[in-house]
Image (cartoon, rainbow, N blue to C red; front, side, top):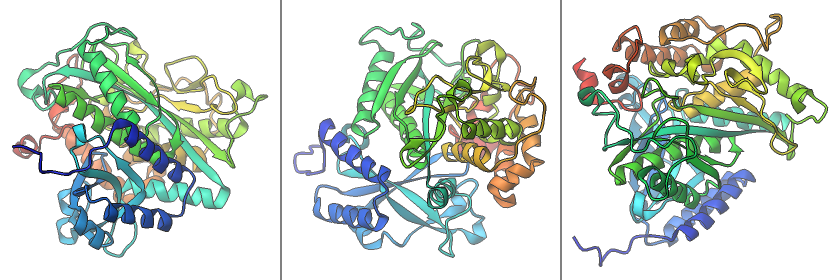
Length: 476
């Protein structure tokens, strides 16, 4: 069908980058929400080439959901958008299904028309309960409230950047078809930093990086990773909610680019046994008035006392939050010491087997790296549990806490047991949401063989929360 008569918004990548970086700076500068709202509504009204607004939100497990609203309808009804929460895993029961979607106007993105369709813009939503309060199972809203309260009370800005690894496999829907094929096929076997210009992996990385750049990610570096067909595309630091939003967009962009190439981008933590798995090393710091509070030129490893107390609290609560950082059956294959796995509950400047690493830094870049996070974790939940634990958690009186011989669980059942009995997990999430989350993880685990064994089983893929074949799930 000819599109000559259509007049949908389709901007150049340079124009997109300018718009997205400007919006990002507004968000970073904490421009008043009502001012941004006024600007965005005026823009949507004036820009006749926009047909729809895609509103994004995440469920309790971290799956990204998208609703398209007609632009004219949204302009009139943006403050009364309702949806059925009972259809979202981990949200409301059927008897209390109505929820609202608020709009976080600061989290507004212009996306390339060649991948997202012409005439569309994206914005993140906030789930609101019937009483008008932030919905307790919308962890994005929980994280945002936590970060805003710390900024108001102490002047803190919570910063994060994530190094998200993934695999590129042959064929579309490689994960959904795994129960039939029983294998994943590499597109490249070059290895670390090695991929020839123009081969499928390099083309995928280049294209994804271009889309990210256009969406204001402010890229840093990208490269093939250690395992065959593995990639990592790094981008700059951001305020914690914006950083979590970018994780969701990163995975969405990767999957869309791969699909357009007839391939699949996978963020399963260990889709192939015998090679390195996918991690999401999570770099965090706290700043106040533009000053990095984790930096101390005279501190041990140049990390401040505040930074070290943050690390000690993370180590103290490692087993309490392990299920939040490693949320799938498959993720416990990654915590394997033979492949640089960060499964030791330790802190180190050099040992990459430690859960927490202190990278080399300076006044601007000093940070703490939590290495045990898997890329399929709910990014809002992972970042919330890390910052909540590091700031408000307890500190164990265990001797030699930072180097004690302790390990993270090597299976989801132990992680579930630790989580269910953890008072700290209840403090983080509340009993209701904690119970819902544990039940979701238990339901997935119960559909999989209890022993991981030596090869990836079909159920740990097909019942994975990010793959989630609803038809197969309901046949169980």
